[in-house]
Figure 1: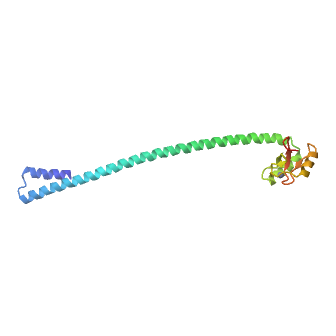
Figure 2: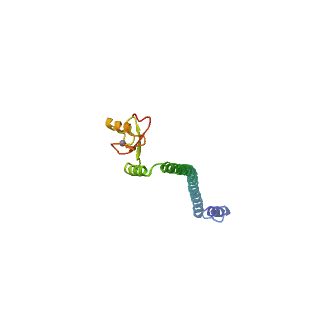
Figure 3: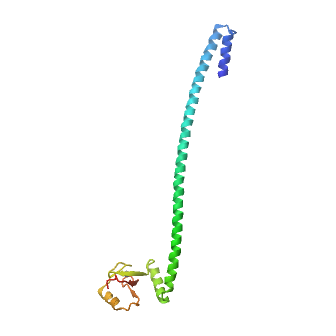
Length: 173
Ligand SMILES: [Zn+2]
């Protein structure tokens, strides 16, 4: 378009066009071309502005993605560390349990395992201030009297939930 405008201007300046009507047409075309060029430049400017703002948005979103990814990585690392800790604790507790279980008579261990299965994973409970810590029920006087009379190595059980009761100095006997 610029070339065409320049060519028209050249023809106009050369003096080759003499007819007033042709001259007028040529001038009109030059003006119209200049206006179209101006319009196109406006469009180009607008497109460039839009591209710039799109690039800014891309940069902003890229930064946010990076920040979120950082948080995800951090959470994954903490989760993995927690898993490792839990696994180590499970290994330790399992070993400790094996040692303790080896010292418990076979029939008592069998009873405990059976109760544990029936009672949601807790086969034995502490007797604390006359209350079974398994079912949280306070024991009746007659039951407490029986437990008081029982030998220290007798296996006593909760009348309510049937769990094995563990007697301590805080049992309230
Ligand atoms: Zn109980």
